[in-house]
Image (cartoon, rainbow, N blue to C red; front, side):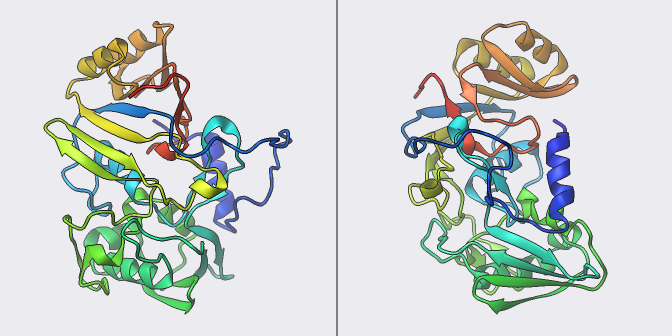
Length: 318
């Protein structure tokens, strides 16, 4: 799938200043009643060609790995919309990213009150541990070039110091591969030269946490203490079950049968077939895209990696 024009326009604006949740700005009617409480919206079944070989976001490479890990771990920069279409888009873990005049220093203000699923506070110290890991890892250095140092003037503020201007730092910090993990999942916890500890459970800040896994399937369950729930960002879903269907034709068959509600990706022939089915919707194309049961709402065509906290089902399943 391709980034939509609206997504690109947001990122271009965010290179100067990132602020979300500052008002409606779209002329929409005021919300007269609060959004439904988190959870209670059933379970989404999601067909993928494979399950992730790792839950380390920095090591995730395939679309399937990025899709799964993104639900557990969050990057600093994000713009989140809640389910049911009732909430104003909000900033993610970083409330603001402000560059210096020469674009060599970026000051990032962090959201307060956030905790990792393991109970560890999300703060500047946690971000520093992650950035030290990025700096000492080839994948991290390639995703965030010219980073020479990071410091923390305040508990809710970090500064990225660059040896050369990086105008698109905001876009880079939005990469799901640069998602923030709990220091408890790093060895050493300082982050310097750290390796990711796959056996440490619940090490993200995301709306879902890993649940039971078995042959050909993996389950994520709703994180009841997710920071986004009190401000109406969801998740509406109680859980997500990822099901392996290696062939595009298999994924389409499961979608048509109602065994899954999302099939990602579908090839061009399967997309055409799904388009002709009045009970199905599609996103992307023509060479590849996503097939959806008509009950699924909240997956945006502008997102290459869907954020399932904002998804809901008009017909409950699970």
